[in-house]
Image 1 (tube, helix red, strand yellow):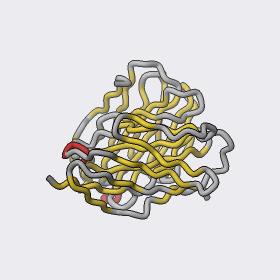
Image 2 (cartoon, chains in turn yellow, green):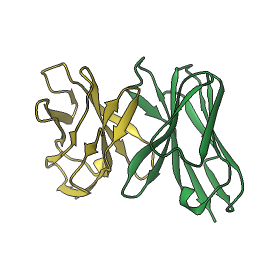
Image 3 (tube, chains in turn yellow, purple):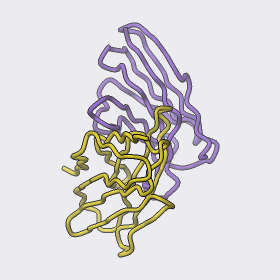
Image 4 (tube, helix red, strand yellow):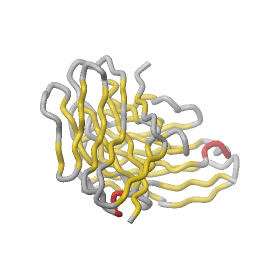
Amino acid sequence: AQTVTQSQPEMSVQEAETVTLSCTYDTSESDYYLFWYKQPPSRQMILVIRQEAYKQQNATENRFSVNFQKAAKSFSLKISDSQLGDAAMYFCAAPNTDKLIFGTGTRLQVFP
Amino acid sequence: DAGITQSPRHKVTETGTPVTLRCHQTENHRYMYWYRQDPGHGLRLIHYSYGVKDTDKGEVSDGYSVSRSKTEDFLLTLESATSSQTSVYFCAISVMPKGETQYFGPGTRLLVL
């Protein structure tokens, strides 16, 4: 079965510090994308970053970057210079043909 | 903003009653999805559609049916609501041909008493 595992149910970080959220996945796809979504208290699901598996270079979007280890099927999200507005649930997702499989999420708390 | 709306945004209903949730998109994307979100489970796929009248089951499809008679609308129906279907329901659309990058609607909170 194709799975996505987020082993950290909760994480916390102080403002301006860096935090890394972990994700491992299992897919039989040969050419695929991986995703991190953010869900703030408003419940809106927001795409944070996308990684193309065939690219060696790790994706970056401003303060968000990924550490993609294809052989290990690991896809972690690094948030630099954390801000109070980063507090949210974070979900990683991996493909299964026409569908995405989501992890169970990591709740990130940001302390002033 | 992928132009996705969901209605209603909140609903309270009683066990045994039928419920229909609507997802509407303005972008004419081919792929549409219905998920439910529950604590400890993340998002789980209920049903999805890859075109008008083309639908398929997800991992938690029991008790749900869907219909897509127009590209822009994807309906989720609970034929006879149960308390276990109390959840937050999200609709999503995919802008990529292979159903990958997904953009989500605002969600519908459903409470079944």
